[in-house]
Length: 111
Length: 113
Image 1 (spheres, rainbow over the protein chains, first blue to last red):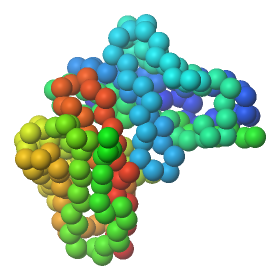
Image 2: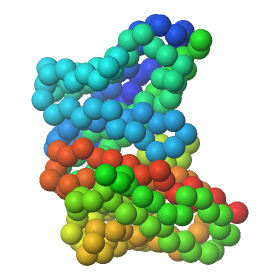
Image 3: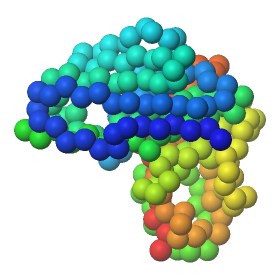
Image 4: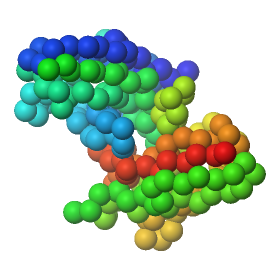
């Protein structure tokens, strides 16, 4: 059975802290891994990773994929209160043409 | 470029009724997929359409159905609503080639009373 596991499931930090979100997966016919941010509405796309070892960056956020060990991490540096959200990791499974989601990680950034 | 548009955004229905939700994908995107999000189960795949053909269906009862039109717009229908169908229904669109970026709409919040 396909599995995407995120850890930790929740995290409370102070503004300025750096956080690392983990995502491990066991998904048949892996095509890509995607990270989304969800704030009480639709998930907003952050990154899509297909190749191992290549870091994607966007401002204070970065992510990397390890296809050998089947995991990905999402880093957020110098966190701000606006980073408070649920972060979702999903793997796109080829053949089934679907995303398999983890449970999400709730991040709370306190001022 | 307009994003993924879903209508209606909020709706309340009574048990036993049926509901139709609509999704307009990003222009040029031919794949539309639907997901159900609930606090207990998280995001679960309902079905995916590409060029008017359903390519895959998730593990949901037959009360859940969908279709896609020639302009790539999609609708999903839930018949004989149950309380447990209360959820956020999300539509996602992509080019449909496989390892494409997948974008989500704002969702339709369905409450069944």
